[in-house]
Image (cartoon, rainbow, N blue to C red):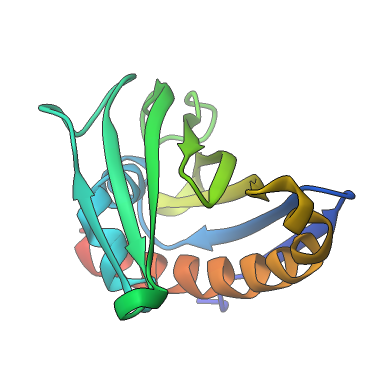
Length: 172
């Protein structure tokens, strides 16, 4: 099989970092979706990060979780709430893609993140992950948006590679 492709698109405005990372996954859309939406699993793909669910249900609109990234006093919390929850309609090409959006509402990072999972032929899927975030206080965002865009592109490309390996290992 051909090596999975990664597509990275990024940019930044004056105050907001924006990036999109895409990857083909050698797993059906439903397996890729369940891998991506198992929030604590993200800790295995994102360095120096732990993730905990903060609501009774980990899935659906209103579900909440917190990613804690860093070491010691240099760590910060990134609390998120699911605002859109639409699992893929199946694993066949032409089935409805899945889409999840979260609102980031932390003291340090705010904005939104989203991903789509599209079913492809041959039991594969395609993931697109995007983030539009800003750093608080806003006066810092002007200086940090370019760095967040670059770090986000590189970091989430690596995150999607690790997720794709895990989803592929769970595929039949």
